[in-house]
Length: 220
Image 1 (cartoon, rainbow, N blue to C red):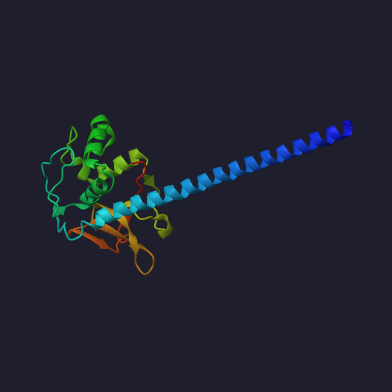
Image 2 (cartoon, one colour):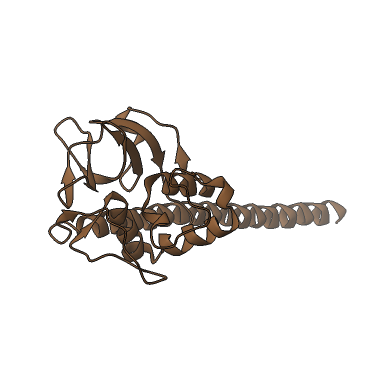
């Protein structure tokens, strides 16, 4: 009788242990499936956001026809010069507003009010100017660095992704800013979307000038 009870007890334990193992295994795989799903979902969402940003820049082609660096009094926030004109930074400013509802005019101005000493003193200003600060390449470089968006400067094609922002020097000393696009030339080098003098265009000019900065927007 005792032998039978022990046998039944062991059988009961074995059965429930097996159920426990199955339950844990299913939970484990369900958890792994969830992790994989979230990773794929986040990657797809990031790709969609980048595509929106690039398309917002590309949509300016044919609308912004002139390069005009003249000082303009702007409304605040979300102030802009007429869409038919602008400078290289206006391409980025407009694309960020359309794609992410992110207003560089406001965020740069607020950061400069609190941290004016951190920004370049090239123009001899003693206080922030919300009409022009966000339209100047050196100021945006500083703002991007302070946001933690800086990447090492490189000429390796593999280091660039669509939606990246790069800066360069157009001889002899003009700072310039461009958006890396999602189209490439026959050598797989990405095209850039920018306004370098004749309105917004998409061109094969990523490595034409010496690069001075590389940025990838994150967390907005």
